[in-house]
Amino acid sequence: MKKVVIAAGAFAKFPAFGVLRKVEKRPARRFGTDGFSERGNRKKESCARQVVRKFRWCIMTCSDRGEPEIFSSRKRDKYAPMHKENEKVPSFVFIIHPRDWSDLGRPVAAALRLDPRLCVRIFSFAPLRFFFGSLFLLGGVVFPRLRFVPCTPRGFDAAGAARGYIVSVTLSAWQMKQMMKREFTRRLAYRFVASAIRYAEKKYGVVRAGLGAISAPLAKGGLWPAEDRRIGAKITHGDTLTGVFTVRILSAADELFSFGGFADKTVAVVGASGLVGSVATRQIAREFSPKKMILIAHRNRERLAEIKEALFARDNYRGEVELSLSVASIAAADVVILTTTAPGDIVSAQILKDGALVVDMAQPINMSERIWRACLSAGKKVYRVDGGFVNIPGVKLKFPLGPPPGTTFACLVETMVETMDGLEGDYVGIVDDMDFARE
Image (cartoon, rainbow, N blue to C red):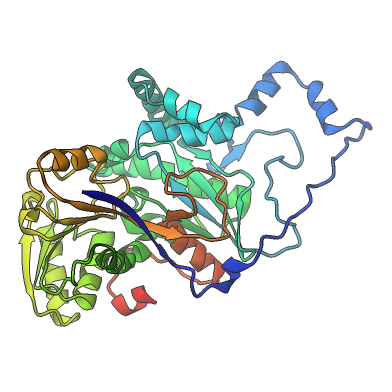
């Protein structure tokens, strides 16, 4: 059994990513009107105000429109973007959330300038997970500033063609999944995402916002923020590129493991009714035309029927298509594509076929190391590929998102590329045009 990480290179046609980053000088120290430095002026402030500055990530005031603002007495904030003010570089924000509660340690460490490894270990304790989970959920309902944490206050440079910012929502993947079960709680969770986008608009002047992981399906595939009158930035759900890259990942895995192509294989797509799964299903049918495809969803069988019809009518697929509402159907699959929003393992060693290839495109992942070890103990040779990662040469995010060094999530890259190209409009909802998706 082998564990492999394959990151497809998405920037081959973007030569700007090969340009060395321009080193900018730090701005000169500013002085107050009384002749003292700004540092000296801060010493005159009250003790309470210094505490506010230290924990500025959880203090806010609300304007008349309900938009979050940072409580600061300075005329210009020290976390202002690093690019020059006269440079007209478009900026974007990428919305993330903790895949598990230990993930919350990363944005908190960035906000408080602490060691990320220490914060991750602290948030791994169960009592603290419960405390902070309740704090951010209940506190975020009352205080909008507790709904998000800025992860890259200074931003990061995208080859000089754009500037990016990362903002984390303070809801975990499990909380989002539970709140999506009812319309009222789903709308409540969406407020966290909307507040993060509005903050980035006002603070950084972003023109586009990308939705990462479960924040995209939570916001109806990006339709809610796109229709929100309080949000002026263009919205990208980022799942189009993730779905399209499934084909590249399968091609790379075929070369690496010598499967001999997929024309005579059975391919199962778990989560085929979702944003990523629907694109991946149709792209696989077009590119490889496997002899059989198994489309699996949790409960949306009507959506599976629509995808099946599109495979035959629009993608010229001539193989067999099976629809299922049970994950156990992957027992007959040679290739398994995982694209669900479930925050945890959805497969087991008992139902995976010996010699199967598992491509995990989900975030959070749907097949953990524990399942690999169980397959190994059962004597099954299973290949697993971490999908959804893209090489980003020359771009330093300045925040540890979790993917291997030099790579990041495809949904972030899609947002970045659309901002760099100056594309207009929202890229939200279900993707029906596969030719446009490949472009």
